[in-house]
Image (tube, rainbow, N blue to C red; front, side, top):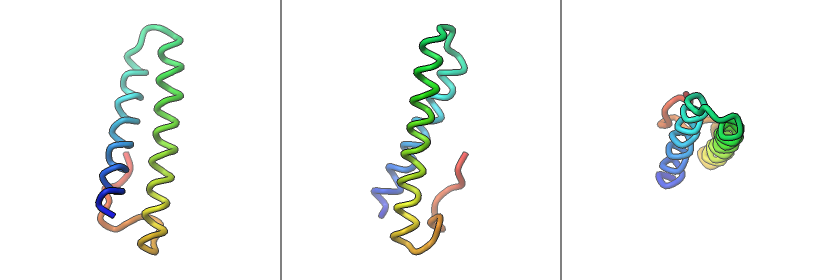
Length: 68
């Protein structure tokens, strides 16, 4: 379970980094790519969060930090 929580935290961090890079990018193609990547990572994080919830019997595991 801790492994899944670590992966969830990493996915959230990576999504946030992509979103920040998207906001700082000056090239429109890079912005689009980083926006898609940030969204994809956020979807993956949601899927991992849901899997954790299913394993613990709750929607969100109690010891997980709130989503940004």
